[in-house]
Length: 319
Image (cartoon, rainbow, N blue to C red; front, side):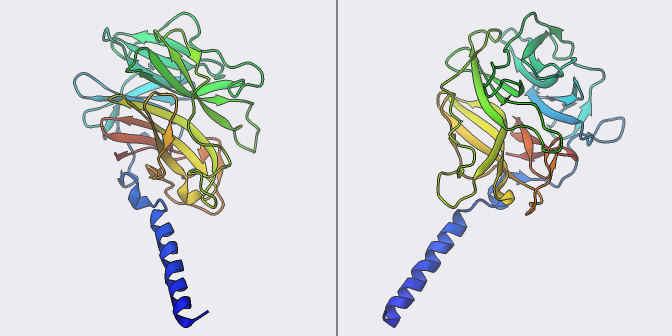
C-alpha cells in the first residue's frame, strides 16, 4: 500500500469514527434539565422528597393550574401548582388505590383509573371536582390469562382520548411475581382501547417498535434494550406521543425516550433521549423502586416533564 493510500485510509477511518461519535445521544441532546432541587415545596415546610411518593400523573385545570396525583403507599394523594414547578400538597386522600391515571371527561368531571394494592386489574372512580372520588362499579380491565404478558398484574397506566373517537390506555403488563433480591419481573408495555372509558379490550396490534435485548435503533453494536416500562402518552393534534423509561446495556444511555404514532398502535422510537441517567455507573444498582439514577415514571403536562428517581423523589425539567 502506498503512503498516499495509507493516509487516505486513516482520514476515512477518523471521519467514520467522528460521525458515529456525533450521532451518539448525549446529555446535551436531552431536555433542559434543572438542578436536582425537589419538585414540590409544600406550604407547611419540607419537600416531596419521600421516595414513597411515586407514579405521578398531572392534569392542567381549566384555570391553568397544574394538579399532580401521586401514589403514597396504597393511596393516591394530590398537590397543586400555579406554575408547574412549585407544588403545595392538598389535604386528605384522593382515593384508596395505586398507580393513578386521571382524565378530564367531556361533561367537566374527572375519571381516576387505579389499581388495587395487588395490581391485579384496573378500576375507576369518578369526581366532579378532581378531589373527592367515588368508585365506579365493575372492573375496567382484568389481568391477562395464564402465560400472557400481563398475567400477574397491570401497572403504570396512561389514558388518553383518541382523536378518532373513544379512549386508549397504555400500561405495563407484569407476567410473574417479583423475585426478592432480583428485582421485578420483566414488564411489557401494552395497550387497550375503549369506546366509552369503561369497557376495555386489549389491542393485539399494538407495537412499540422495539425488541428487548436488541439494539434500540436496530443497528449492530449499539446499546441494546434491557427493559422498557412506564409509558406516558399525550396527544398532539392527531399524533400520539409516548414517553417511556428504558434501561440500556450501557447505562449512560438509559433514561426516558420518546416514540410517536399516527394511529396509537404502531410507534416509532426516536433515537435521541429525552432524559438520561444523572450519574451513570458501570455497575447499575437496582432497588425496589427501580434502577438507581435512571429517570423513570415520566409524566408530561404544561410543557414540563416530571419523573421519579429511585430513593430520591420527584423532579422535573422543561420540554
